Length: 274
Image (tube, rainbow, N blue to C red; front, side):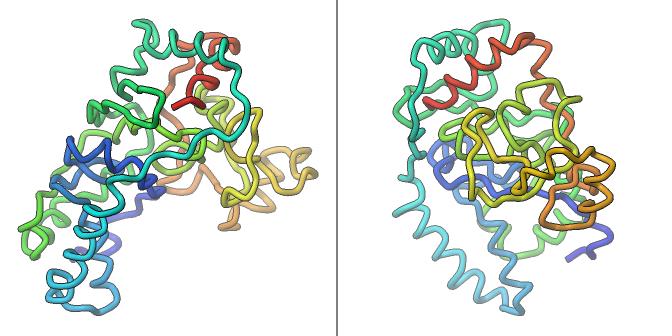
């Protein structure tokens, strides 16, 4: 395998397992869709870091992954939003989502409201942090092609990240491929207003107003400015620092099309229904 310095760093959050059913027809896996095949098997290579041989990978690990995906994971469906939904506002949001001006459905698919999506499998460069894409270097691909995993699929560079299915999106926070945006409110608003640093709360609490995670576990931290937050917590791994390599929160700028807070609230209300 290529060394760490050659591969680089590409922060990523794990996609939810209930996306599997939507992604199987596209047969492209992981945030950048670089692995092409019927099952997502690249993660199995982590077993090599435990000094397990390739034989264990091909005879035990990969068959187990295939069996679990075929018997359980492909049938998972997203959790339903557990609180009241403003149906009139959600209907307005649905119109916006499928409108020509917004164009959300062209990349993210069409939804039946029962947890199912016709996902187009779009992988696009929308200006987000490229570090994870750049991890798939020529040396990385060569190492893959010389491994037994090459019999199970192909590893290819991707030009962008998956326009992820949005089923259960209310529970899939923080957002973007690297988890750099804590709420849907911030994701759909001006990029300049996205928090630069926030606490990692591990889904212990839910911000119903903004739909996502609270920025701080201690309400007192809200009164601190960015400079003080970076001074106190910039090197604390319990805080998300968007200035770390691979953790930038730019891109996916949809605010110029959304334009108003009323439209943003309507879209968020509709997203709760998916």
